[in-house]
Structure formats: structure tokens, C-alpha cells
Amino acid sequence: MEVFVHVVDRNGFQKAAHALSLPRSSVTMTIQRLEQHLGVQLINRTTRQIKLTPDGEAYYEQSRQILSMVDTVENGLRDGRGRASGRLRVNMPASIGRSIILPALPGFRERYPEVDLVIGMSDRLVDLVQEGIDCVIRTGTLPDSSLIARRIGSFRWVVCAAPSYLAARGEPQELADLQDHLAIGYSSSRNGRPDGWTFNEGGASTTMTMRTGLVVDETFALRDLATAGFGLARLSDFIIADTVKRGGLREVLGSYSPEPVPVSVLYPSSRHLSPALRVFVDWVQSIAGARLAPPSAA
Image 1: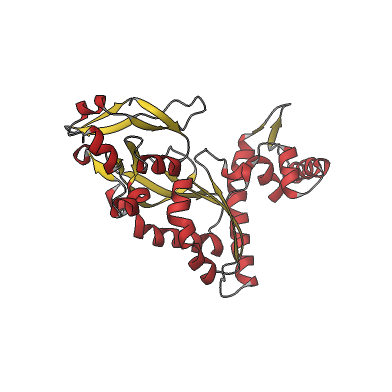
Image 2: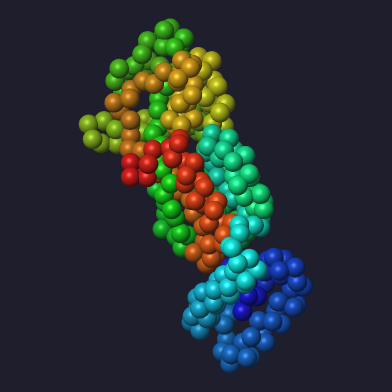
């Protein structure tokens, strides 16, 4: 049953064999014996992919639930106290990782010394099942998926600039004034095209393409360039909060701020919430409250 679930989750015999540290021939033989035992065909095999039969789909859903219950029972027997331990792979945007998670990490390590974390920081979409990742932190409206999502807060986009830049170029008072200003762009695409800036004007959402003299693909480089006076920048409020307090940046056009952006923790519905994953998700939610707006604001 476990081998079958691995084959389906990874959409292939070879990937399942690698994940299980078994020869591919053993995985193939196991599935054949399972089908013989059940007396039904579970998988339609092609050269490029696998496709479940109706019986296979039903068996897969039940198998996931059964295996999850078995894991829960065995973990409880191994540690009656439900102590959090083991290895967790997590992924998150670098902006959240560096601003929120990493500064608070000593407290997590002190409280849960037996939980080993493997942290990836990127904005790219990851396949949790294929890549063996236990949970991710993501921003924005989430697409429909089989993942379980827990909202942990929200943030606000802020247009800001260094006082030196505003003294030299003037402070924009309305959106039309932006045509007289230079922006530092942020690009999340391979072609280097800067992302548009979204504003709320009269209750309607408006996206503008700014004139840029510099474009970067790293959030903290964007903040540093803005602080150095290279132009206007659009950054999340939790990243610039300390810089604004020190006077290094100043917010402009605050009345045109768009709706807050939700921040969520996601993990596969097929994966039971182990003690390690549970304490990590709870911890992330608790520390997010110090830097992010509450979930209800999203």
C-alpha cells in the first residue's frame, strides 16, 4: 500500500523507487502483486505517465487515510508524550525567511532541539509531494488545490523612498505625479521585466508600469537601493518597518495602498500533522503575529 501511494504521488515507478531506496524492478513487482491480491487493475501504464483506474483512485484515497492513521499510531507508541522530533523540509519567500523566520529561529531551536529543519528560501512554485517538502509559506491569493492552508497574517505594499530622494525630486501626492519619478523595479520573471505596481484608487484596483532605471530580483537589494536614494520602491511593510523607524525610508501615497496581501502556511492534505510539523506551524503563526497584520485584515 505504501509503495502504491508513493508511485501515485510521484507519478512514476522510477521516482517512487528513488524515494523508497528500492530497485525499480522491486517497485514494479510490488504493484503487480498488489493488483493480483486485490483482483483489480489499479494503474494504467504508458511510456510517459501513469493513470489510475477508477478502482485505483478509490484505493488510493483510502490508502492515504489508512497510512496516515498508521503513522499517527506508531508515532504515539514510540513517544507517548508526542515529543516533536525528526527532519522537516520547509520552503518560504526570502523576504519572510530573512525578516521573520530566521531572526526568531534560536527560540525554536531552544524549545524543540530534536526537530531538524531544512529551509529553502525562494518564490518559485514547488511541488511538495514530488520534492518531499513538508510545508511552505506563501503570500497572495492561493489557487484551489489539495493542500491544507492556514492563514497566519497579512502584509501591506508600501511605496517608499529615501528622504534624500524626496528632497531632490519632491514627494508624489497623487498617482499622476508618478510620471515625474524614477522607480527601482523588482522582477520576478526570467525576462527581467519589472512587476507592475497596484494601487487602490477610488475603490478600484489600478496597476501601473513605472519608469525604472534599475531592476533587481532580490528584495533586500531593492530596500538597500531605495535607502541609498536611487528612487521610489515598492516593498512589503514588514521589510521596511525598522528602516522607516530609523528615518532611512519614508512612505508616500499611503492613501492609495491596495488591499492587504494574505500570508499562509500550506502542507499536503495527504500528510498527517506530525508533532514536528504541528509545532512548526504553530510556532510560525505565533511569531508572525509580531511582524504581520492579523489574518482577519487580509
